[in-house]
Image (cartoon, rainbow, N blue to C red):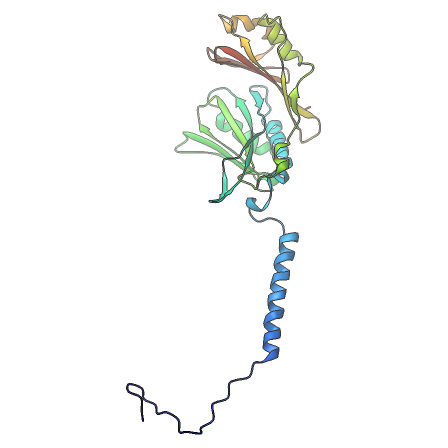
Length: 291
């Protein structure tokens, strides 16, 4: 009897069941071998292949590259008509590698105080002076109203700058991008208290009649051709009534780049001096050039 709705009949009594196809052992062996090969190649790739995205390289590994990039920028930015400030290493732990995984990013700035209208020219000079393998480029955009610089220091460390074309303060930043953080990420270049301030800083303190020698923070970076550049920072120096007049003894043979109520910047010899008013006091920063 045919089952309702189905176009087949039940087999007659005594009909043997159809034979099931036998498993092929060689096929199972091939599949297992392929899985093992793919797993082995994946493990080898993780251990041997270079990282292809910054998230594959931890922050401690990127810090030496960041420091070399900062030294290269500071050296490339040197010039008699500008003042430089070497920034401190900054590590931010607010970025995220994934929605559930936090990371850290390290940055370091070189700030350039320059005459008005020279931003693009100086960025182009920096791009030309950076190592050739950084492939640095500087250009104007927005009809010449904006200027910028981009460079690749290797190891997924980037160098960039962006500012208005008429700015007198340029910030060139080297950054690692967001990376896995580890215990070594807190280490960096030498930073501490300077035992002996440079002559340019002593001249400023003498000109401002600072009788008690304040604590001087020291930060440094290695230069591309050897040696080191250093930044000496003093905070909370009492501000005089007339900053420009008070500075006159320290400005002998100096090239003044900035002279405003909010602060001064000048070049004396190979050293840069930047003075800014911060919270009713003065912050004095002296940066020695690569030598």
